[in-house]
Length: 497
Image 1 (cartoon, helix red, strand yellow):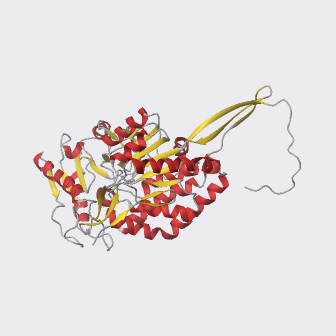
Image 2 (cartoon, one colour; image 1 turned 45 degrees about the vertical axis):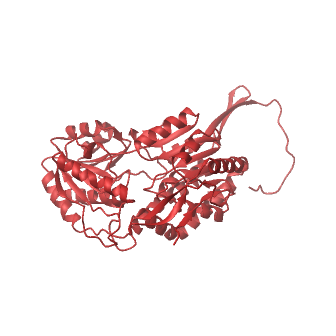
Image 3 (cartoon, one colour; image 1 turned 120 degrees about the horizontal axis):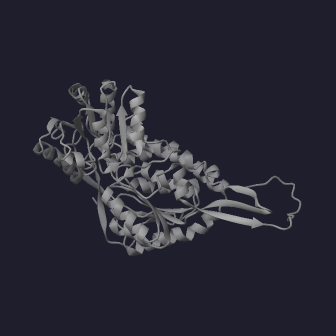
């Protein structure tokens, strides 16, 4: 049986392109290829960009009221049919259905925030700045923008960007991960059903060739990227060199600092949720617990007792955690367990070879807990992106903060304590972009902005929130003087949009 082929979405329709290249798409819970995705060539990239470029002037000039109505309709359709999208995500990524639904809900928050476009796009006005002179500003779209998204959130991460970009009057080309591309096509179809004009939202499938096409084409004015730090740096440097504005969100190594006065039951629950949810394939996953002694031994016992209750299996069943996205990725994550042992760490719970509620051919790796991890080990210094939770023991709050601040990443962190003074000091001193206080995954709500510091973010602008509208628009400032008033005539009708 020939696997189905996931096409592009260009000019409002499925498009299989002219390339003879494709890549496998797996069902990670079954461990088998279920479809293939087309990989764009130069002609396909040109067609996608040309379509978005041609659609831009009319979409830019459409009134805010009409744009807003389409986005509201998209929101309603998404809310009504998000179960379909969740099933697609689970079938290609592997996360459990409830987690997939949660991902969509968080993305939908940005869609809802984008509906506030009429407020976010307002300019400013200063009357009589000089005698008879007024100064005012407007915000206008950038043009064609590219969104390059990772495999771990095939719906939510694109929705961090494209609702705001579209609301602001841009046209969008989404390059999804080739590992789980079908969610992007589903969302493109939903946009068409919502009434979005053809060419305003495009899906360009592919690999590095597609990425480079978006980064170098002069018709693409801005790039939003989420992925690993080396690629984020490449995207930022290449896009910037070609005159684009770029926001590139990179990798993470998120720490949870646990003070001796913390509620250890809350800490243990939070560590499980933030360390093993979505099989640890989250840029906001907690991967390192920094335990201020003497709490580490007790905390390890509590975490282990909870790990024993977890069910690992096919995300379409009643399970707590699903497989990893591919066999290659599973094996890479599993290799860190051997590295930890070689470096002298203690393997408390080994997730390899576990019993699962699913097909034995799936890409399984159970939750893994490693204690006494040396800070020189790759297990500590590198982003693992899987269900591997490390524990580092420190003697004091100061040592813990110094450890966090000395790392290369600055994406997210958390502190668990009942001491308000310590929490307030932590949020001031820690060099990280997103901070949780007794909250393990400090992902901001949509009307705030998402992004880290240091090697976790390249560029000056974060995702969504007010910074999202700033990124996808350019400001114009006008200085005007009118010597005589104008008269537009009489019209008693109520103004329409």
